[in-house]
Length: 357
Image (cartoon, rainbow, N blue to C red; front, side):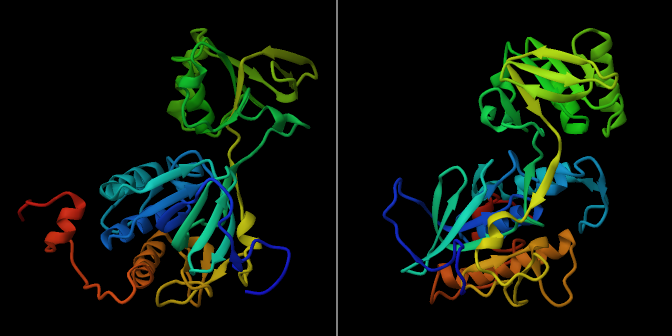
């Protein structure tokens, strides 16, 4: 890989601290394909860590259409994005992959021993024998409130898609947004926070009817406040709202929880020196490896002749990528093809040893 001005795969040094986390494999992306990649690696006894920019697993399946039906998963007549993610998490659980949410992989460097050193936006580092890019169309990151300098309050009194609401116990909280996630967050906070106000630009929502009905019931009971308008200013303690009638409402608070949806960003992947084709990474169709040894790409992020952006195709790619990685993780070792129906070794790995047909 040639070029300048990027975090490339040139030889790097390990002089920084703290010491990187060593792993057989690092998966970038915890969507359905990334989760199934971890499962296939587990069947081959390859340990892995998974990094995702979102606060929970599921990728765009959960973030963009969590409640919408999916009809083309083999053997599953109908499921939803959330149900699919939960099923995949349950399937991979026996292999105990380690998740790192709310982080984006920022740098990738080849080391002298041919392993790959990766650094995240949170300052975490990994030293991996293999890397799997399962980032879909890029890292999905939360949309930000469009106010100047508001970013300085993130993690203090401003939060985007927090993975736990317990931190807001006893507080006055404003939830900004109008989709399922925003309404569900506001509803859940009524059982935790001292005061909750939902702010949305209009009195209409892009959310499930039952969720909207539950939200309106709480408003009618006085347990949830609702304000139409858009944020116009924030000083860390008071959120100013510009209303449709051109007036301003001030909401004193302890925290703002913004649930404004997510958007894809190819991000640092574009700076790693790959020869991208329409913002996708070319791979072979034998093991879905990129042009860099040990770096694989599966799911919507990759491209090859005949590529179809379907979840089921990503599952196939992840299977062959795992086998391609096995040759690097266990060099010189002959790995027999085993079947989960009959292999006692696989039964033991899956925690189903001793079951009978």
